[in-house]
Length: 121
Image 1: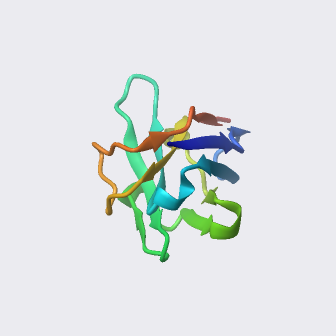
Image 2: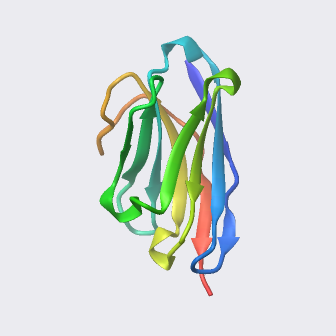
């Protein structure tokens, strides 16, 4: 079993930046994909970005050019660098690990508890 712990959320003004981190522990040898999902209030959880152990990445269209996902294998950590934040990016962001690529909206696998990101002036 994999345990995931997120950090780095917070409140920023539009146009600001945040970096989310997620540390994996437990059965990390089984992890092929790590990613980030988000869920805004009253909306369904959606995929934001994913990355494989060999560096393949995927992003939803609304964050391309603004968000960057990266992975440090030695630290068992995945990052989400978010720039040019918009109010519509406000959501709880969840870390996810999986063995299926690419990630989809109906992904299974392991989940973190989430970290709140609020973008507001």
